[in-house]
Length: 131
Image (tube, rainbow, N blue to C red; front, side, top):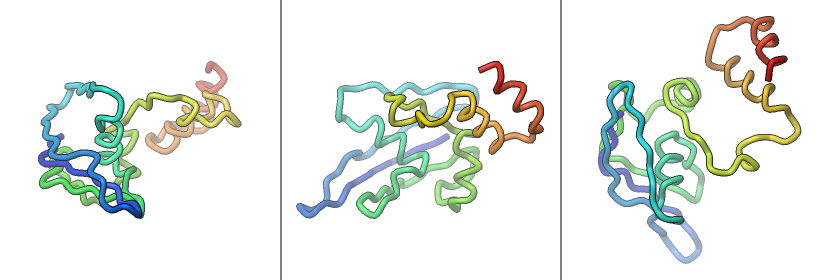
């Protein structure tokens, strides 16, 4: 994955508020990147921007160059759904905002497996009972 010049801004009634300005990094296959910093420095917004989860009416992101295995970041939403959780993923800081308390953790894990693999229903259900 290559990211060069990532910028993300939020738009409010008071105008544009830059949240991330000029992030660059390169990750080779098999490498792991940890982003650390003080609260409010843009760690989550950087990750959400790359994952394509920060494209709301009030947010805009721009990367001079962003590629995952040679594929442009300007992929369709359908393609991004295939990529998220399969090619790239994010571990959220707060489980109460990431997990749905109305469903078991096993159910939520199996949903990701169902979406991103060809594992059959019976095999998924066997795995779910173990969670």
